[in-house]
Amino acid sequence: MKRTRKTFKAILAVFIVCVVISPSGWAFAQGGDISGSVTDISNNQGIQGVILKEKPVQTTPALSWETGAGKSYLIPALEIPAFIILLNGVDRLAYPNDVEQGKKVYDTNLSTFWDHVVHGPWGFDQDNFAMNQLLHPYQGSIYYGLARSAGLSFWESSAYTFAGSFLWETAGETTSPSFNDQIASGIAGSLLGEPLFRMASLVLEGDGSKPGFWRELGAAVLSPPLGLNRLVFGDSFKSIFPSHNPATSWRLRLGASVSRSYDQGGSPDNRTDATIDFSMAYGLPGKPGYSYKRPFDYFNVEFLASSISDNPLQDIMIRGLLFGKEYEVGESYRGVWGLYGGYDYISPQTFRVSSTAASLGTTFQWWLAQTVALQGSVLGGVGYGAAGTTTGVGERNYHYGVDPQGLLALRLVFGNRAMLDVTGRAYYIGGTGSTEPGTENIGRLNAGLTVRVYGRHALGIQYIASSRDAYYPNRADVHQTTGTVSLVYTLLGGTGFGAVEWRDPDRR
Image (cartoon, rainbow, N blue to C red):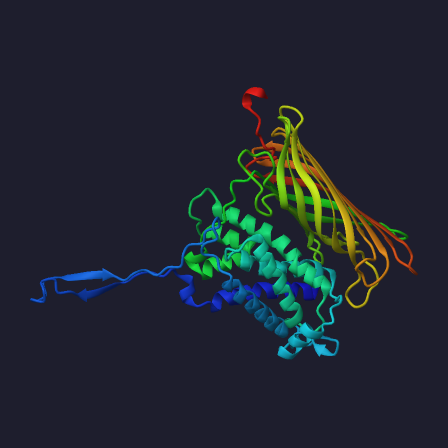
């Protein structure tokens, strides 16, 4: 975990270096100046007047997100390798004595790069869970954000992300390139990067006015690559990504929790922690005039952190619609269905699971009564994931494999007074695509009741239950459970509990 913290700081440090060393000319829009020119306006019979001419202003065309005008394929193609070179340099300073396979990990050169490209061999690395399943996706989101903020589309930015991950695997370290990192950085990085980019763009959009310092800062915190390119390239990338006014719902919760973990054959482990979590649904179905033509025009994102010093970030769960279409049933039901991309990182006290997946499913809202709405998502798919606390080599004490999975999320909204939500997730990680036989069955249940007290302020209670059943040859079967009860204060978004209204007022 100590190395994990250092690596996270290294990634952020690279962005500080980029800002400091950026040529000052990039940070300013080009402007015209005034030059005097003397012109004889009386047929060369003496100077009768002086005309001051303004030098033509040469400006880069403003970025248009609708037409693609002004976007750049070259800039991220230069930025991503530059970021990788800087990150490698920072790692050389932070971990000068890290040695694997008889070589210093970060002492790369053209010879090691070419050897990896030609010979590989590709395999599975031994890094710890947080490094592989959290920091590598975040590193991939940096590649993605550099391309996306330069005006590229979701799929174009995803291609740059995959290429950036390949470049790091072959040129960033002397160790053999790994399949798991290519998936985590190259694919999960895009699935994490797009929600961060969209939320940062919402901050910049605001009420439609020009963003000031605080909105620019907030956007940069959410998506550092977006903030960097807006700062460095000035007006070239100042155009704000248009959200098309989606129906959104978000909430921020602060709580105190009591947890009990049980490991088969052991004694229960009890602890008390402070928690903070944020969740947002973007593009909820049913809003008149909103369509789903771009990847992630609908997405749901959840973050959960706790006061546990050695495991502060416990959950990141993202699902976004890649391809889909709206549908409706009668006057009271609206939905969208299609192919979803998902990235999950779940790390409670005793075991953990992470997955990058594609799923088929639907997201919907159904008005059950005049002021009662049922919102939900039903997904089923397959991905590549990691789970467990199995005995492994080096730092890797978890199991990789192809993982079929499913999700059922339901939210019952009672007007502007209360909300009951339940979400269940299941993951099965077998031996396919793994270096060892065995299976992991992981289940996760979230349930909560939230009651509005005044304005956007609410109180609630939340229960989270996680279970793990693991089966490996020549090893005792494992059964683990963790249960957490939290009392929470909730700050609701401007749309309250987020029920979307499309019904004719005269027919309600």
